[in-house]
Length: 328
Image (cartoon, rainbow, N blue to C red; front, side, top):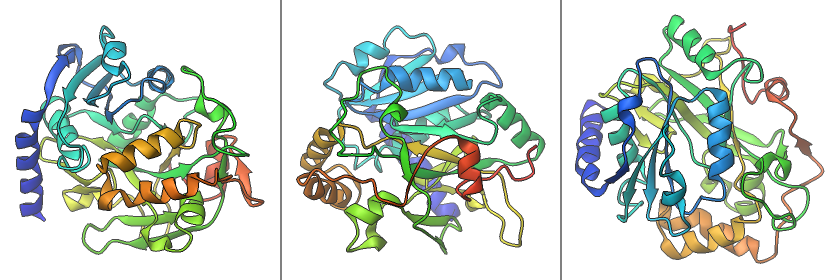
């Protein structure tokens, strides 16, 4: 595992040559700031709410890689003092689906900081997030000597066809996508990295109903007290050193955990799926987007009679999809 980690660190240094700085405001980062890192492509319609949501949560600085957007993303991000942006025209797939680029950003600018790694359609929630900023969580994690914090990805979807209600720039996606599967999840342990592997939800139920073992993974470890020796190896599903993946209790009890509200299924989804299927820059020859494209032709309604409407984090805690552990 030590060799794997060193290889990952060497990869990120090599792949850093593919990044061109467009706006570097990292000199404004202060000790103790909580950072957010993301890779985006043609997500301008989502960015106004995304940035507002995380600023309100307490994120101090955004480190963003733009992967050759053509929708005005770079122009929109430019001039925002708490945002630093790098641009690349290189292959997302050959950069381990953006992981190498983001590992370099964290190694260079985030050593000693708590860092949240999310996609622009993911909204992090944690216990007491309705009353406490993210710094309250990171302070408690520091005091508890916890270095990494997990969050299960919860796919949200509308009631009705995906493209029935248009999404407007700046709008809260949860105004449209506010239903989720309260059950229908499987969990197993990954013997290599020691992380949990979670599958299920609407993507397994609808898009991968005939091959559920190929459904996307829902386990993530998006919040880490970063050290320049750390590296993600597969999206935010697994980290090295291996001990960072120990975000659950094996011998009874519960560790605190959060959730990522995944708002992929807006009316923009059809166009996005078609684009990504053509680019073939995603995992396993874009098998996920192949399944999406085939199902979208019939304009699927992901809602079912077992769907539950999202209310708040306490609802997910009751359902066992996240936990406050011993954080009171």
